[in-house]
Length: 327
Length: 96
Image (cartoon, rainbow over all chains, first blue to last red; front, side):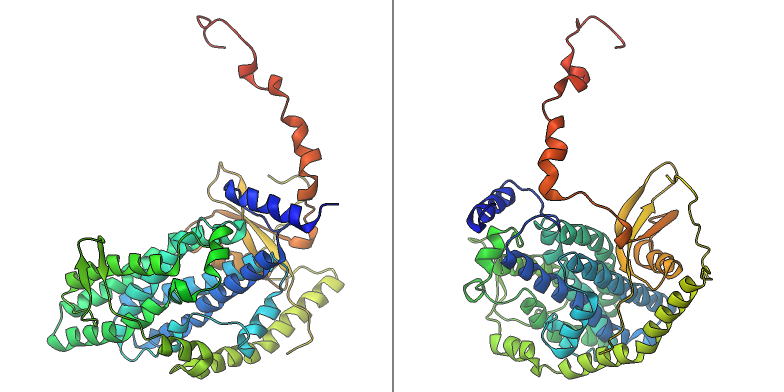
């Protein structure tokens, strides 16, 4: 029998060699726990992220915008499901994850605890929030845990539509009336700093970063990703003719990057701890959905049990039972 | 929280177009196979990713154990004579 040190050393060798880890492979308990925490948090973010945007579906300014927003919110439900499935391969159940979200044990991205006050916020979210998410998620397509990496590949393919629909909303507003442009500027002002916070604490305040890098869970640090986001986004704001809500943003020739101002980490921690503008509202909405859906889950299960007890097939899409070899 | 059990887990396989095999796309929960197919359509084929879907309850899949990977797959490693390049033939020979 191998001892834990040998197994851990061999595990690290596999990671260093660029091998992917699959669910049934041996893995250190901390690797498993870190993944359950990170993947479920990511899944919860997709699901809670539907709420601020869902708020505007019925009030979208045109049918085109409504279709786009509906499709985006539906994608987010799908992304949540891919991620829950990936987390379940590590031995946690779907219901357990849901309970962790509802009781506050599990977190989700703090950005979704801010309100969507105007239609321009839908543009700013697509452009900035999805833009920041894409940077993180592109990195995660190369993460060491197979099911997480595969879910990310699928998500990244779909996500660029989200960002483009957001930017197009911003572009339309910026080419519109002065009031519309002002609305876009206001949305940028409110969304910018929380978007920067999405990458998490500074590297020196992020105790998990070193281990996550060694296990190739993350391939870049929070600060590296944040810088990448700023460098990409500043020219996009200039293109819109909007002003960045940070007077310290300036191109630094020597570094080859934009410098930017200090983030208000007190605000970040306040929102993480549950004191953001919409934390309670978001969890209450999820709790209501869970409670109101209980009878549906129960009824579907009872129906399926009854059917299988009397050997009947269910209605709906015709399920073809294979009689022999299928291929 | 309800004491009811969760809906079972299904694995989803999708044929992206005729001529190709079904490939594993992911998994999902559903109360029965019909719902699994409906959910698979919504979750995995929103952008014409498929023309055919299989769903199978995950508990019905029998998988090899990664710990036995050595005894299962290593014997094939030293059997180079199963590959065409193992056989030396003159270069001027064509179509073989």
